[in-house]
Length: 158
Image (cartoon, rainbow, N blue to C red; front, side, top):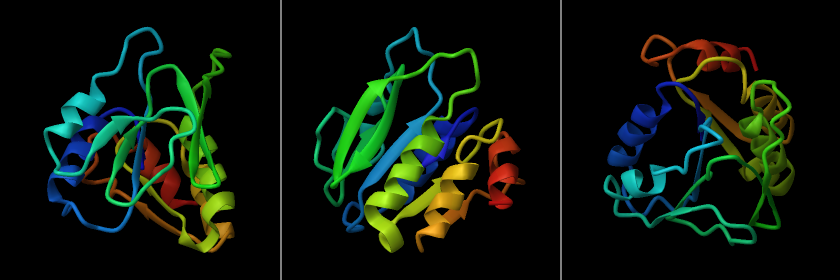
């Protein structure tokens, strides 16, 4: 699941509503400040009975767990394992959600599921297109309900 501005609230609402035994794994990707450590794992752990942890390189993704992208990192998945890298600053808007979703599409094919929640910009749109192209399923938060509708509106066109 990917989000940006307003995303913490959207993630929180979703985590509160999910039962702890969905049989699915959740990877939460948010645009974070590259200069401040993230507290999202600690915050989200209070909202769900599922284990919530920061994504670490090489971690196996397991059902009924939540992994959170750490600050200043990009994330991919291959063989059911997470792979962290330093985020390319490059002065442009981050595409961490697209990168993860594109790798997810290749790794899981038709079993991939991508979700875009509140945010600005278009990160996640190309990733949802990749998931669809590999037979996976995509969801987008209703832009009317999103705190910031840029990412959901862009993703609707995917």
